[in-house]
Length: 156
Image (cartoon, rainbow, N blue to C red; front, side):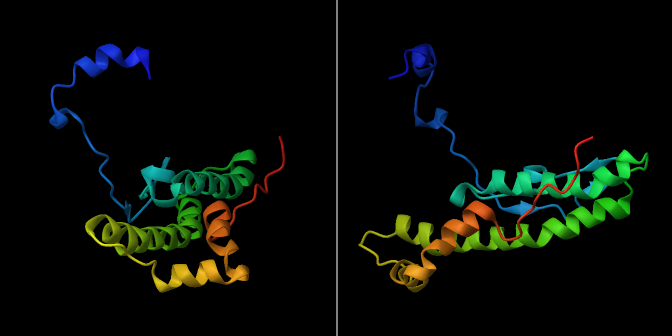
């Protein structure tokens, strides 16, 4: 399937040579120090559930740009107070998404993978699928996020 990997495949001696992705969901208590702002995975490691880590990273970057650009354009500096504003704005959406990811990971995925019998979806999933008005909610949360960020800065 991938001829360019031929020599690499020959290097694999056993399944012990194959490494699985370690999934961890955590976040820094403080995302910044003077001269440093951590955003995205540097500030908060996300589960791969729903693939929203990149969405949060981009939203973090947009929030940082909106808060920092006006000050930096006028010759100011990124004070700890400004950096704290960024964390305050982005921390709640991060916590909400991480909590939902853990609920899905531990409440659904782990149960399904650990079960030998056919399982029915949890009640909330059945409700979301059965009520047409509710069907859009998961896609909207995954695609747009809990707190949307819009670029507010003006071009230079």
